[in-house]
Image 1: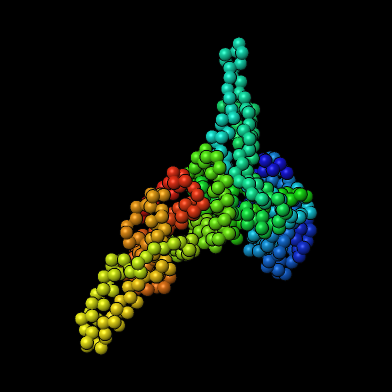
Image 2: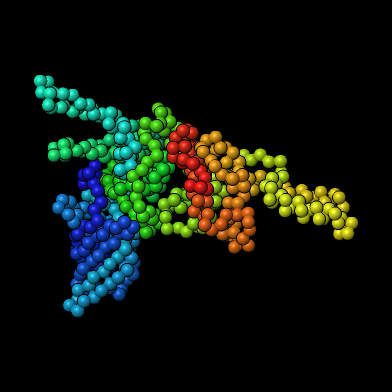
Length: 458
């Protein structure tokens, strides 16, 4: 398998082995935008004997002129359609949770020592670095001909620790001259070398975390084309179905907010190190953030609930300064009006001034664990870091909106309306992303390129 040139195609035709059904069953593997399906045609297949198959394998060819062949290992297949014809032939359609592509029929998925992540966005990110490798000169005594010299730069090194070595490997391909001239294509890969072999589950987790980091730095949550895992014995490419990984993005974007040249020497070593430290401390809210960002089929109300949960987790230990008094003008006004009524009738209700003071302290005291106070503190930290244009009562209104969605309380004026849910969700997402960028040490000028403006008007 030519790893540098590999691309998934939409259909692979071949023969498939399913332990409960039989060997060498002809069929086609379909790889759609959000689903992976296996369509089988066979004779006398027992279609009523099962609904789910743990695994299957096969050898199949690309359904195009190239006819490249691969070994496939399919995981967790669910039957969604079955048709039996009068002559004993059967058609089965099965959804596939994930697939593994390799050169070998026998597969060893553990003892992983390397990961290679392929995405076109990486090509764009390092394009300035690659363009500098090309030089042009006129050929001697032939002014109408140009000589092009390509001197490759070293592979950019991003991060190194006792157990991980992260770098970008640079590939290049070209076509022979046409009426348009030469055509050069870059193929860049994010590589993670691992000193001590680890199980596939751990390697998959590491690859996901690096994909998340670069989606953050690029402001583009598109999935990579594929991820390859390497052991000392072999290598394989693993792909999940969007349906079963819950990643739904209907429109892919090639926009990236930053370039490799935006980061100075040593910046990425610091950022990747801080990212790994942050994952060790805040894995759950970060996973929730990116799971929500990756699924465009969620309703705005669900997105708001998720993002408030993310901010709650990220700010759990943020240092909060408070004199213990509620400062929100509208909430404070309501409490003051109630307390004033009580104070003017102390004798009638039999309450002493000391008891009134205790009541004031209990009602008007704001705990430093209050989520709106923690998010307000976070906003103050970010005020000079990124561009924020939010109303003073944003935090309280956002939390009240989440509480209304979650607890179905009576709607009040001090919350956002339903037609404001989408801009609210985008603000909450950008606040979470900004705080992560701030925490892992991304410079303000880069963070502003990534996040742009945080405003309810966007």
